[in-house]
Image 1 (cartoon, helix red, strand yellow):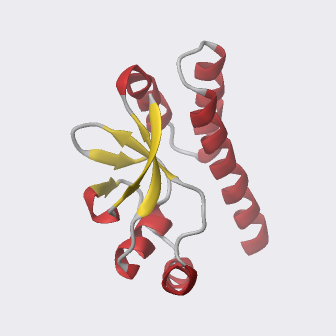
Image 2 (cartoon, one colour; image 1 turned 120 degrees about the vertical axis):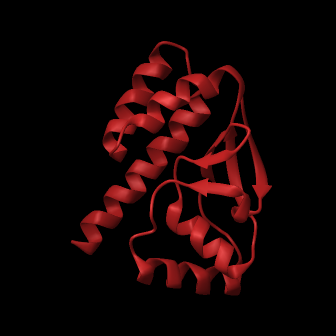
Length: 129
């Protein structure tokens, strides 16, 4: 099951380090000026919420003191999303998600959100290269 909620980023465990301080600073400034306008972060909704995406956005939102829209993955879909979580690179996550989607084990909404993340991160890599 998936649903989008506004969540305080302080209550989300980030497993990836926000490696680009410049990006975090730019996001903090944008959040303080215009609020959060980006994609929802994807969160595995265990008893403790774990971020599947969005380490920079979560850190910046925490600094800016704002809530973030989060696509919460729970229920049966959560068990399958763990396989996505275990993949290390974005393209690997998307490959796993595509297989799970074809098998009917995750929603189209989750797949689309992951694809958007992968597309955005790939564009950013090309721009910053």
